[in-house]
Image 1: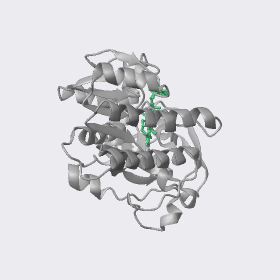
Image 2: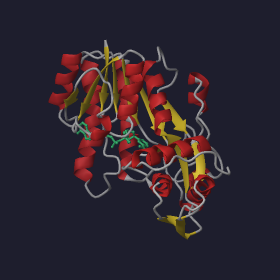
Image 3: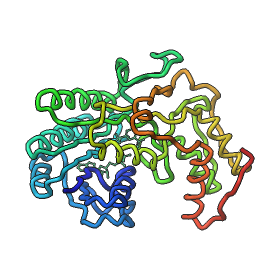
Image 4: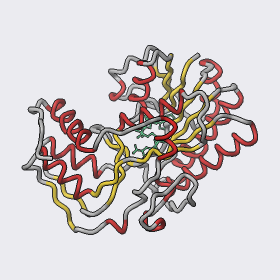
Length: 315
Ligand SMILES: NC(=O)c1ccc[n+]([C@@H]2O[C@H](COP(=O)([O-])OP(=O)(O)OC[C@H]3O[C@@H](n4cnc5c(N)ncnc54)[C@H](O)[C@@H]3O)[C@@H](O)[C@H]2O)c1
């Protein structure tokens, strides 16, 4: 019995694959871009198959060949912009449905998919309170709309066919090699670690940060759980303004040149107060503190650039 990871060679996929392999799982990766560099060092124990999730024939053929017990879909048009609505719709909506339908036809025991904090929309819609999985959706981007439809479609499959399909809504995933989606928080840490200046529009803009290793761990737990109690989980994370993040970075790198065009931004922020008690209670997940993760990101970058590592810091 094996686990099929669709979208295996992106930002989150390789970390999840590594964790599955460490647990002794047999893992098969699928990606449109199977040879992506980020995947080169992962001891997957099986080749990554080239497959296009927008093509039902690809998805069903792979599932019939592999006969996976569990499937997770991470392939998505993250940061694909709103400028290419047709292509992104095919990947996000049709691609996800292809995964659900092929999993149904081949009797997959557990399907996990990535939704997003983006479905909740602006924090201002919730005032100062935490948004839960049961709150209304206020997202307005095409990306958010697609995630909402994925959640809707998952419910259809669950209700009509009794499938075990579980969604996770990651917050703003962060890590040294993130290049798609929200990257302002990444730039602050990565450019400062390289000794390069960073200039961003809004100091007060809020993000809810979750390290890529932590979200990979969440996906792992949900994927492997015998019987998850819910169909949807907020990942949650640590809410922080970009200005506060810059201060944490300066605690480690006092000469970091991080500037902002203006102080505001809090009122324009997407949902940043997130109730993740469902996840933490059921799976016992605890995140390392933000200072710990920021130092790790800084040193990951400095190690790869051959720069001296940073220790301690004033924070
Ligand atoms: N990274 C974040 O901050 C974040 C936040 C919230 C939700 N998510 C969700 O988590 C999931 C994974 O995110 P990520 O950061 O790893 O994304 P990513 O863009 O780094 O990885 C996606 C992978 O899918 C592959 N892919 C694209 N089109 C494909 C196709 N037609 N067929 C097969 N593979 C295809 C890409 O080659 C890539 O390797 C996505 O659904 C994303 O929306 C991510």
